[in-house]
Length: 427
Ligand code: NAD
Image 1 (cartoon, rainbow, N blue to C red):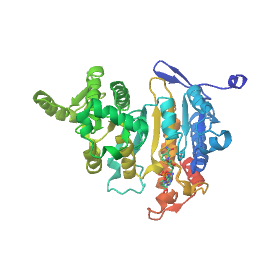
Image 2 (cartoon, rainbow, N blue to C red; image 1 turned 120 degrees about the vertical axis):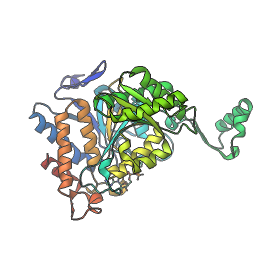
Image 3 (spheres, rainbow, N blue to C red; image 1 turned 90 degrees about the vertical axis):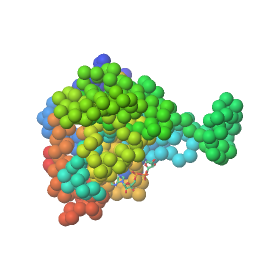
Image 4 (spheres, rainbow, N blue to C red; image 1 turned 30 degrees about the vertical axis):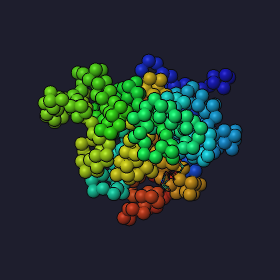
C-alpha cells in the first residue's frame, strides 16, 4: 500500500485510457533471448520518450515474472501476482516465454491472454526500406491483422485418445448423434478438440477492427475465414462480422458479402466494386475471402489487403506468413488488447530462440516495434514516431543484426545491443 503511494497508474474510463506523465508499466523480460532483446529495447523506449517530451514524461518500469525466471524464483510458471500486476497497471509489455514441456500450463502466452481476456491480437505488417525480403515488392504489403485471440481451436478443450473421458465422449456422440459419429474415419484412434466461435466473440473483434480502420483512415477490411467447409464456426464468424458492420456502422461501411450471396446482393456487390475506388474519408469497404486463397492473394495481390480480421488459428498462420514478406518474425510486432477494459500487453512475436540466448546477436526489432505500438496506445505518438524514424534509419545505414546481415549486400553486422544504440542515434 505504502509502495503504491509513489506510483502513477494508468486508468481506464469508459472507452479510453488515461495516462499520467510517469506511468508504472510492468514488463516481463522473457526467456531465452528475452533478456538480450529487452536490454536493447528498453533503452530505445526511454530515449524516445526523453527526446519527445524533454523529461516531462518518463516510464517507471516494473519487472514482473513469468516463464523460467518465475519458475526458478517462485516455483510457478505464471504467478498470480504477475496476472494481478497486469490487471492493476492496465498496460504492459513482454518478451517471449518458453512453453513448459509436459503437463500443467499449455502455453503461458495463451494463459496470460485468457486470464486478462485480451481478445484482439493486433499485428501490423509493413516493410522498412532496406529490410531483406523474399518477395520482389515488399513495399506493396501494408496490413494490420486483427486476430481473434480467445476462441476457435485455441479454447484448449481437448480429449486425448485412449482416455476414459474420450471414451465417454464417444459414447455420447454414438448414442445421441449417430450420423455425426459415422463421419469419423478412425474413431478408435482419434483425439478430439472442440472449436468454438461465438457471436459475441466475433462481434467484439470486428468492432475493434472497424474502429481501428476508421481512426487510421484505412480503406478496406477483409474477413478471412474457412466458412466454405466449417459453416457453423468460420461461416458464422463471417456472417456475424458482416451483420455487425451493417448494424453498428451502417453509415460508414459498404459490404461486399460473398457469403450466402443472393441475386440482389450480387448487384450490390458490383456497386461496391465501384465504391472501393471512390470511398470518401471515414468510409470503409468490408469484404471477405476464404483462408486458403488469402495466403495466395496476399502474395500475388498484396495491395488488395488493408485491415484483415480473422479467427484465432487463421490469424496465427497468416500473421507469420505475412511477416515473412517484410523481413520475418524478428521485425514483427504485436499487441493483445481488450478494448472494453483497456487492458493490453504488447509482445515480441517470435519465440525464445534458445540457441541464441545470452549471445547478444539476435534482432530486437520485434520488441522495439511492440514498444512503439504500446506508446501509440498510450497516446504518446511523438515518441512512437521517433522509434519508427530511428529503426528506419538504422536499417537504411545497413548496421544490422546477423539475421538481416546474412541476406544483405555490404551490411555491417552489429550486436543486439549495438543495434539498439543505432536506433537511438537515428531518432
Ligand atoms: P523461435 O521464434 O523461438 O525461433 C525460431 C528461429 O527464428 C530461431 O532459431 C531463429 O533463427 C529465428 N529467430 C527468432 N527470433 C529471432 C530474433 N529476434 N532475431 C533473429 N532471429 C530470430 O521459435 P521456436 O524455436 O519454435 O520456439 C522456441 C520456444 O519459444 C518454444 O518454447 C515456443 O513455445 C516459444 N514461443 C514463444 C512465443 C511467445 O512467447 N510469444 C512465440 C513463439 C514460440
